[in-house]
Length: 21
Image: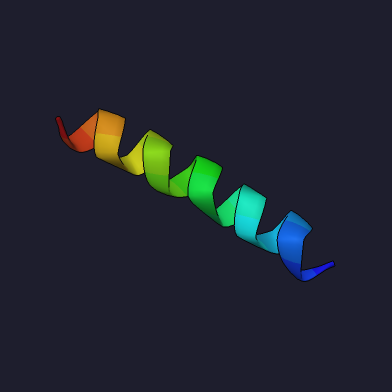
């Protein structure tokens, strides 16, 4: 379960970084 959450969080973080850059 923790792995799944971490994966989702990482994906969201990547999206945010892409939006900012």
